[in-house]
Length: 137
Image 1 (cartoon, one colour):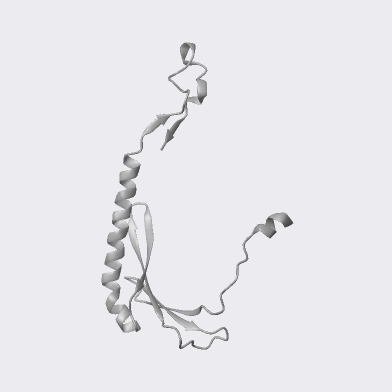
Image 2: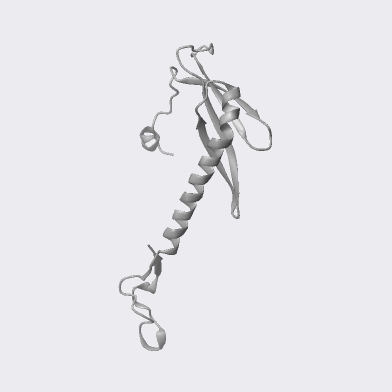
């Protein structure tokens, strides 16, 4: 990488006023709950900000597992555990709808020959003008 390319890279910097300590809780079966505890730059608890709870699960599909992540509106780990099933179900439903929409879009794609590709071209099908490439749009 040249020095000029290096200068164009964005500066990656942590915001010392928005730090969280991350703790993971899992039953090793249904999913994981992550508790994000706000901390100051010295690592001590920042009592001015609320803890955040995030649920994580996986949805198995024929092409592999899709990771799911969702915020849990909870004030404690116990409340996050109670809210996990409903929140996970909602994110699975949303993901299934998004997959159906992607499938519909893919099925409705039209195959359009590249401009100038009209057929096999010259005598005996040799020399296809324009390359005759097929594109999905």
